[in-house]
Length: 414
Image (cartoon, rainbow, N blue to C red; front, side, top):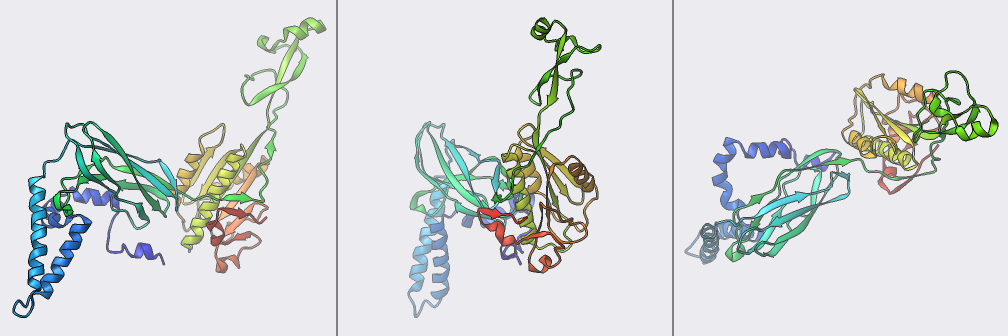
């Protein structure tokens, strides 16, 4: 049971839907009723709570003088609210927030807020507010402050958060407000543009796994129809044959040997690997499936780090294929695909064709299964990520416990 998610059981939707609702007519009607509480600083909210307690305890004015405490605290709140109205005119402040496009699950991400004051007067006691996060997010540093922002000046502050769940995240809008006199209420808020990022699977360093072997891809010596490039190298020279291209003639060898000679080319050997994540898991344990996705992401990063062109095959309700590597798309595309993969009761059969072609070509094939069953084919580089109950049905597969992916390194059983 996910207790963090259970804490949000009464909060429906996600941050993007919350923002849409905040712009609705119902929200605009309710805003004046809750605005007196929302404009209070944490200190002001503490005074409000103390006022309510003192008011409840001092209702008997004949035998208690607590009503005097209530009146004093209420007077402070009224002064704060009235002072906010008097000093409510906001300054010309501009807010922009930047963050990395991706962050690994469980890692701390830094949001940098840039505050620009194009006005002629300085701004004082500014506080930056991060948006309310969904159940998987938690602020590490949420409310940085700027004591003074000079006229025409610029300041940068950072807020930090941590996210535990994979996927595309709508973070929301950051806002900035200045603390009004008495320090109990904020002035009008200035909001930034919406912030988004992608939470990708966490990766670990893999040990005990040899690099993907070189695949020669040698098409034989050819002198026709081949253009030079990074994937080809000079194989040698041979006598001219009718039909060879004129551009492949080697003048120096022709002059030395006395007969026309042409250059031949061949494709160079390179590393290639296929990473298969089989998402078929009718009764998937959430922790085990997340560990399987983390292992697949680690295998992709390992193969790409070894210079291999890596094909990621996601066998889910629909088969998805992503090719990354030094001569292909960046590794981030594979991590983005793994960020949104979900378990399914039955996987599409299209993944089998990719596996057959990989084996026929002699490519390195790394298979990760989220559940045991007939679809899980044992092999030297095939692993089942499962708990103790599912491990008993591994059927010859090497089993990795979900807890093993919690560290920074993993020795892969083979």
